[in-house]
Image (tube, rainbow, N blue to C red; front, top):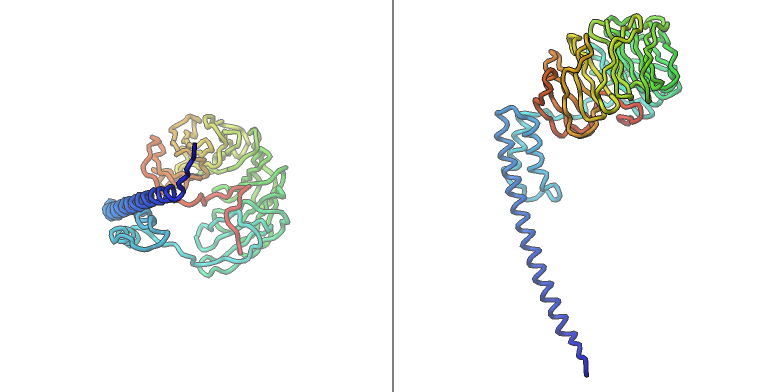
Length: 375
């Protein structure tokens, strides 16, 4: 028996099959290109149609997606896609560019706050300094020193006359915002201070620490007034005074928020229901509600007088980092690590609008995650 191997014939068959595969691949590429083009055209047209409806965020996202499909080469972009994005940018968005670069810190920036008049900002850094800047000129006003440890939190007093900063050395320092002169030191924490809040009248300073305690001191002398203790787990992440100063609230990594009497330190209510650490809280403008944002993906609103749950504001499956009431209190905005912000009715919990492509939560720095690097 003789076995004959026809190599030449096998090679021709393989070549023929390879050719057929190439033709099929080329056809698939053409089909994909046609589908991509059609989808971009549809997105561009849809973006233009949303402009009169004041649906800015959705229109901008569609416009970006329409043109972004061609980002690999930026050639042969459909006219409809370009027009959609151009008209959205022209009508419904503001392009943010660098207006002032504030240079001076030598390490990460971890805290930032505007003065009440909007003319100055204060920054805190891992270089152990806080710095006050003239917003319009982009020039430094004062460098606030005294701490050799990393600073995490910073705040202006309600009248803008003083600045407080605190961090890893467990001391909150208060300076004169005009001269940079040290005024007071608030001590007592045994772990890093991660958040600060002046009372509405500016006479008291509340501090939240990773030692599971919040403390209130006299903002003029630094004398300790009350200690708010009772949280468990890894500490308190946020603290806030009610608009009238009659209450103070704390948010803990033990998944509870607590409402206290800031004069006596008496615990008035413990708010239980979140399934994870609470990263942020805020009183409503009228002081009747307290909102909380949690790593369990949801926000909640509570009745301050009774401690009862008012509404659950369901998230999108990602950790929440911050939340803010609108000035009138009729809306509440939450954001987190999902690159979106959500606008809710805080009384019913109904979702009003979702804003896509919010790059990162910017309102509150994390004590363990720097928010920006300075020059």
